[in-house]
Image (cartoon, rainbow, N blue to C red; front, side, top):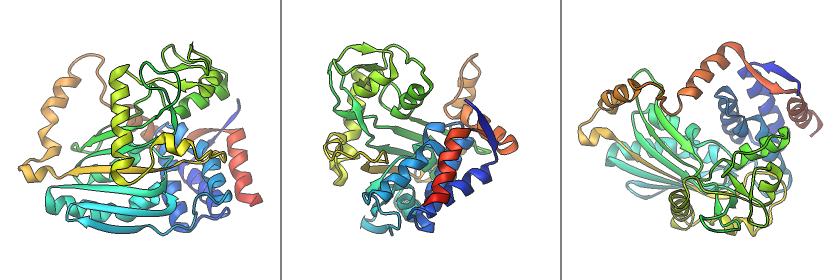
Length: 335
């Protein structure tokens, strides 16, 4: 597979062009392009340019609103709801971020529910601005229905990512962001395109049998990580990022029979704490713990690989599949 090296500015510009030529307002396009560019910079291709055709398809089909205007509502002093107007989650979060930070400062803890949106982005990208504001934060989103519960043989759960972030001195926040499935569906899709097998324990086929074939996994179901433990966490996410905030479960979304390849509709829940309410400077409070962890050979903190990749990308650019680049450039020119 041939590739071409692109600067991050070039990635942002071709993404903006593809989106704005296909019904996206500048506000929606900039929020999505920011996430796409950051994902490519951090080596997270399954959330980067690979997703742009899906964003465009969702708007072209009329399912998503490319010109959405999110509306922010205070439901209580520490509870915020943003109606995404059928647009995309990055723009909805951006509209509510200042209110969320302010509510956390005033109340010590705050929650933000994003509804009536479509979500394709990585949760670490959502958390980083909050952690940069010296807050501790959690985030949950109901993912595409692709996972069988532990002991089950058919799809019931989304990939249902969870994320947590803690600020550190000099940046480089402690952030973990992972699907509660054994792997993200996007990773399986990329392996299928590359003709690569899956590790054992990731998936079952349509008959409920274990498989290492990516195509069979896409036709069957992924498995939770950690058996019953991952299954329970995934069920928790279904509840708190679905019914709790008035949104659908992943199974309910699946029954909508969406076929355009774009991001599914769904909710997103943030819970944010200001450590200052406990008289704590989070940037300093955890450093002894992190130092002790890193003193052990082989230990690497979550996101460390992403930060290292980001530095290289900023200096040297990013390798992008020529075929994918051509597809996205066509979206920008042929609309």
